[in-house]
Length: 251
Image (cartoon, rainbow, N blue to C red; front, side, top):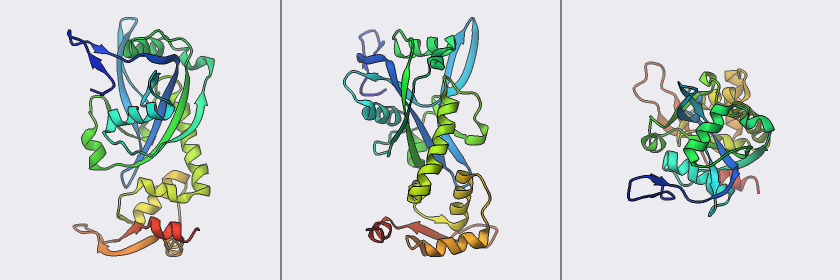
């Protein structure tokens, strides 16, 4: 249970006072497992008009009185992943009057947050993370999990729209600052993994020979002496991203 919650003598969860029950944060967390881009989604269960439903939503929450927007977003991700130093980028506010047009969404949120909800404006955040054991170990599979982007179905509220626009924002931002994409990669990676990640981000195939030439021109992508082990094919060389070289050459 989050430190921000309290528990009564009867074992009931007591939430801190809300700053405003019309303002929320939602987080788009994108990860890469070496072959696929995935998004972190929260499982949602409920009942509407006597029928049970099971779907998914982006991680999010209403804002508590003692926190600001950035703090609320960090709280949401820390509760899910146990990680406290995730880099978050605020990228857009969503305030359409249709955000709460589905009674199922409103009723679920009112039960989850123990507050009356009408129209909601949400501030969206974006994070690129490595899918590693540290994050996976902290995830409760019953509450949240990684879903391949191609497998995402209808989400709660307008979260499909938020996710789609987050991916556009990643592509636009990477044109100016491509180094941000290395946040998706493990500490050491192969050229194939790097190429696959770029292909998935930009949505088109990249010629292998040309990409190897491109890597050779990236002085901050440093080849290692280490190679893959235990693979059936020819073992590929590992590379690493050197942030010091990147920063030094761009002063």
